[in-house]
Image (cartoon, rainbow, N blue to C red):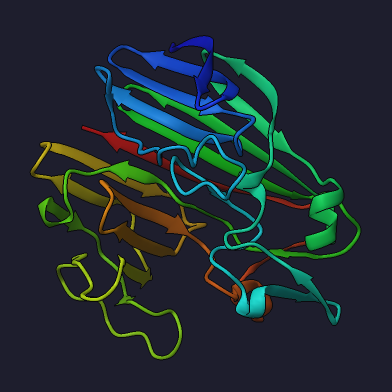
Length: 289
């Protein structure tokens, strides 16, 4: 069984408690106060998760580590969700990664965190929910499972996803092994069929590069010829969309499992709906090599 250790992240004036699972050469670190995120995954001390300098320590939306996306993936049209005819402002990718999570359990078997509504969440999302995030480690594989529960008296619409930032030497060194139904650079309009070999190349005149995929099959993989590392993302049936994203000036690539899309919470048939008292778990994993 992995060993659990407790520590602190102290940099740029920030001070967060951390929980680390270690299993042989592999170590996984979670920072509950910082959006309940997985913030480090190493093999023999080599880091596979990318932290953006000082962004992790700020109160801004995290654009590093592995943000949890809830209750939406992407940004809804006009920056609002419409519930019962009323408009509610919503951040890009929701609020789960902006809030501190509570530690429900932590030992060698895993780390369990929870997030419940507060005044901020009720202002932007008028539903009673409970989120439970479970992290486990078994050798080279980190297990991540998010359980969404409707603790209220009315049906609850939502989407979920994850936004992992993996270290990468350079975009031109990456080779992807992904099977998907469609692949595009814009979620709006007709979606072209995915090519046999999905690539992510620099977009001239743009600061970033993106691929939006539907009908994605598990697993997604990439290999980095510059570091001779591999990353595999496997996922259960709750996920069907995927995103590749990279910023030209940075040394990371995001390979993301989603079950929603930008604005999907506003669109009938394109999001999850939980009945009162119901819950659903979205499980996936990361294997590093």
